[in-house]
Image (cartoon, rainbow, N blue to C red; front, side, top):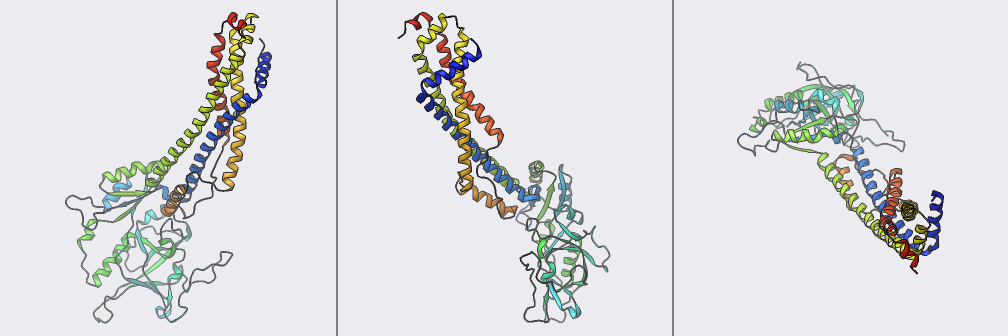
Length: 470
């Protein structure tokens, strides 16, 4: 039997019982549509997660290390997070830079202008290794980073300032309108300049008196010189807005000097090392092993990986669940195909017998039945994919979400953790080309598999009994 004859016989048999064939195809359409839509929802969830992760930027490769025993809660051989421990973290495979993040116990102001007219409270000051600054993900708007601590105590301390640090200065000669704010117009341009040219004016850091009424209360002062200004990015740290960043040794010297002139005794708390260290690794794959190594040193860690992995696992499980629901629908369609083909065999028993008597090969008879089942699966798959595109369009248009508000809450949490605070616009349902091809091939394969049993049954029918069948 020629292939053209088998194709002609295949479609002739399908059109002979049009309603039954249509209903069987509808079953495949529903199954294919269900599995494509369900998987597309899972892919949409993954896309939203990827967009949120992309917003997090360098936070994905940043590990925060904490020493919760820093305040003296731990006893015995508790790990000390000192410079030696930080160096050990720096030497871990995959680590680009490790640096303490140090905020001093220092009460001081920065003065500039004639008769110290402009003053700034020193609230947001951060110390870290100077060598770490270029690797912290800051965007340098102008200048450069300091190369290390200022060992010459009579010279200015080189610092890096936030984008709007100049707006932190107050005009002490005015009672009203003594602050300027970094407000922008509709074009994003600043409406007014700050009182101070932060990069060029002379800045003097002077400690506050412990007791203004005590004539013996002393102060110390030191000139500071901004050599770089970084762009505001709260994902990188609050200090990028109106803060000051300097080498950790410089900030320790300022704190020690403040304690000396005010006769403040340092507590044993200072012997416990740093409370916070930031570690940046090369890739996301390095985060987990580095975290485990740091935990083995006796410290607690926190990173975006602690949120990212559970969310990805949850998205994977949801995708498998949604795909399973679609698979059940397609399984029901497969049973329908099998039933249709078995019914077709009962109706065409005499025809099968005649074909055998005329010398038609058994494998050709089998091929005809398999071809019919495959065509049902193929046609149903194509229509199902087309219907899936329509449903996907509606879900994206109306912003339908299968997961309710839970997925949104997760995305908002990721944004809060450091992803910019806003969820990136993403498709709820995503149907890539590979899913289209896979769905059609899978539907066709389901049809062929469903037709194996009926086809084998047709092969085993006795030619003599088939001819006698009415």
